[in-house]
Image (cartoon, rainbow, N blue to C red; front, side, top):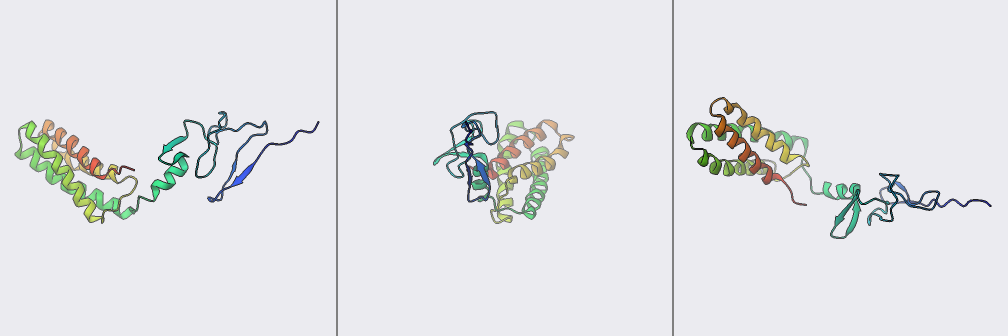
Length: 178
């Protein structure tokens, strides 16, 4: 008796061919070929396991389709990363001078560091015309950390409070909720 091959291929709008069934008639995750599944991405039709599936308001999608959708929100350029880092570094250094030299009380350093970090974030966003890249939050946070790190020798406790609170504030300012 001749065996019939149950392989169906589908070419999607992304130009990739997706194999939906194996030769034994079962469907397997395209990323984890050892996992049986019946779950498909509702955009590209790929088979995916529970680990690869991302729940969205319109159903389950594969991680590749979700990332493709997210990329539409990120319009920042490499130059924007440089601008964000430079502004965060310079203004964080100024903020560090204020917090470490003039605010010796630790509680006051906590309350002043958050608005300083948020303000640095706002200046950087305005300088880049509110364009953000996928890693803008991390780049801005690194600028704040490096700008405040010099003050660890002057007043380590206030400097650590400033770096932590201002870094968290600028990260939050840049983080997009998609």
